[in-house]
Image (cartoon, rainbow, N blue to C red):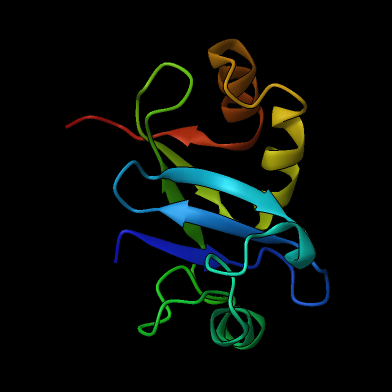
Length: 115
């Protein structure tokens, strides 16, 4: 499953398209801002019910952290699920800017440790 939808907060009309290929968000917005083929009714219903559109409930309500990579310095980070919305908001108007990505990761996530 290369992409799925995550709903950061139960009662908020806000969804995130997440890529498991790059371990990062692709887009995020209210439901009506998504193309119909990305957030069809069945995917939205699963995200509303489970916190994710993934059938196995990957990154669902019970998931404590998400792994983020390929942003900022490109390292791997653990992002608490509860920080997902604030982290996305911190990316602001220029979410492709590596400096802004890094600042948001430093504020809301933890770099994973190498063995």
